[in-house]
Length: 351
Image (cartoon, rainbow, N blue to C red; front, side, top):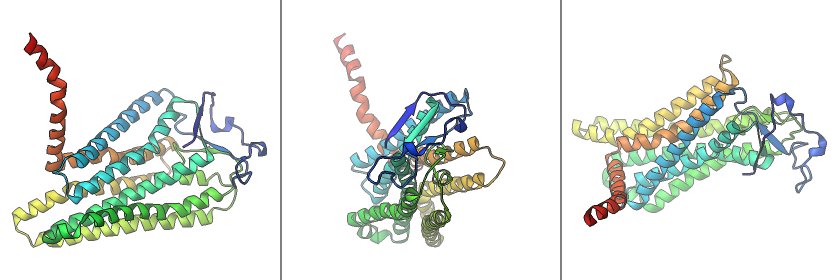
C-alpha cells in the first residue's frame, strides 16, 4: 500500500483546500477515472489532542497482542504433530486472516495518531478498502466452515475422518477466500470507477467504504444497492449456515447421555463463543452508526475496537477453552525454556 505522511499543521479538514484540476493523476488513462483527486486525506481522530498518546499506546499494545497470540496458534498448529485434526487446520487459517485483517487498518491508524495529516494514494485507499472487507467476510466464512466441521464431528463422528480429508479441507478454505472475494470485488470496482473531484478528506480512521462514498461527485444509488446486497449475502449466508449447523448439533446432543453432552458442548464452546462475540459486536457497531447521539470520534473508536476485538480474543478463547491447544502451547514454551536456562546451569556447574 502506498502511504505518505506530512508533518504539516492542520486544524480541520477545511484548512486543506479542495484539489484542483492541476492535481490530476498522470496514470494510464490520464485521470484514473477519479476526477482531480490523486490522494485522500484520512481525517482520523484529529480532535483528541493529548488523548492521542493514550489511544496510541492502547492500540499498539492490542496490535502486538493480536500478532503475538495468533502467531503462537499458527506456530503450534503447524509444528505440533498432535494438532493434526481439521479443527486446528481451520483455526490456523482463521488466525492468519485475523492477523492480516488487523494489519490492513491498525498500522495506518497508529500513523495517523502520530502525525498531523495522514494521506493515502487513491490506489492505496481502494486496496485497503478491498482487503479490509474481503478479509472480514473471509473470516466469517472460515467460522462457517468451522461450524460445519463441528457438525460433522458431533453428528457423524464415525465418518469424520473420511469426510474431512485434506483435499476437502483445502477446498473449504479456498471456498471461504473465494466467497470473500466475490462479495467484495463488485462494490470496490464500482467505487473505484466513480469520479472524485473534491473534497478528498475521508472522515474515518481508514478508507471506510461509506466514508469514501460520500466524496463521490455523482449519484451513488447503484453503489449503495450493490454494497448493501453483497453485505446481506455475506452476513445472511454465513449466519444461516452457522445457525443451521448448531441447530442440527443441538438435536444430536439432545439424544446423548449427560457425559456425551458435556463432551460435545466442550467441543463447540470456543467456536460458539467466538461467533457470539463477533455477531454481537457487529450488531453494536451497526446500531452506533444509526444513533445520532454518538460523535464521529466515538464511532471511529467503536469501529476500531470492533475490527480488533475478535482477532484479539480468539487466541485467548481457544487457548482457555481447548485443552489440547493449551497443552500444546505449554509444550512449545517448555521446548524453548531449556535453551534459555542452559547458560545458567553451565555457570553453576563451572563454579
